[in-house]
Length: 486
Image 1 (cartoon, one colour):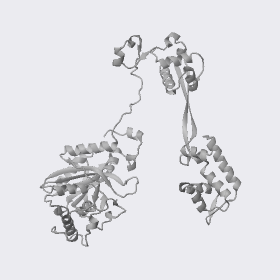
Image 2 (cartoon, one colour):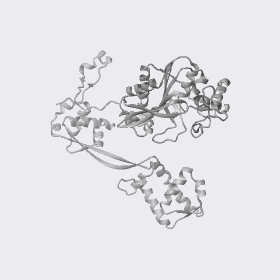
Image 3 (cartoon, helix red, strand yellow):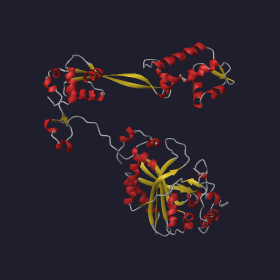
């Protein structure tokens, strides 16, 4: 017979005292245990040894949720409002709004409408008071004694946090023939040692103790250990690829001016992207002073095109608009400032950082997300170099099939959109191009600048096989544990 643990010995000794099935409560009582996990573990071990037979049955049951417990204590929402209406015959909708919380009045009236209450000219009308009273009474009794068999369970399950449907597992144990024949002397509890420690070896306790054996063939649960969030792991993977390709990382501030964020990139001041419904403008600071000489250069470029052989955008350039504070809408605002500080030094830099746009949250949009940005500035930089760099990056990411197609961006010419092939379809992942002279000339940049940008979340959805961007930021531990190591 395999060596038993002390809890297994105690439980088997108890089961030998009576034939038939034993419930969990009976085991806990007779074995003098308070923790049911000890009983379940001992029963599992005895079952594996063939000394005990475990039986499990399940049953669906209903328990009250947080809102259900509040309703049990304070009364159902529809009951409280209905009582208020009956006690005040001339009550109006305005009275309800004044007497109940804003988050209660609307849903409460909706529940009463389902019971036959109507509103005409702001006054409540109803025909069968007794029928409404009876239905509310039935709902109240359900809360006092919820049952899965009650027809009202469907009604309450459709209401948020009033009830929870749970599955109760009932476990019983019954001793087998082999278990009955285990001699009593084999079930005496002795001191067992599971871990050998320096303190144990320095004492004499180990001499009279028994070392607990381990069955390496038993199934074991997977250990839950810490790991990087898939988004952070993807960021680190992207960083390592760019660093491997000879790029340096750039990190800068979220708060910028409209000048650097848009004017420097030759985005016209009447462009829709500048509107408040698309950009987060700041109250503090609402204005950030910029160098007057730089403002004059941007003004000249925007209004007339300067010396670039461009005609500019025409109109009047506003220095006040240029100095408005905002949360950056892209990371190019930081790379262009880096180039302005180092206009004659060849460089290859990248950034993976947060940007902010006033987007409504849905399956493909977030108001705060990450952008992958890169630039190459050096003599002879050209479109072929840009395309080769992007193809190399995506190949290292595991997407060897890459293509580009013509596009339009205000600050690059030529401009490209980059697509990768995934599951037989071409997916657009970002934009790229070579900075226009209207961008580089005011900053004193003489060499060509290749630039590209892409959304990190969109790439993450591709890598992780998601169709909803919100999944990336939901604290679903089970989903996070099951994600591949990137």
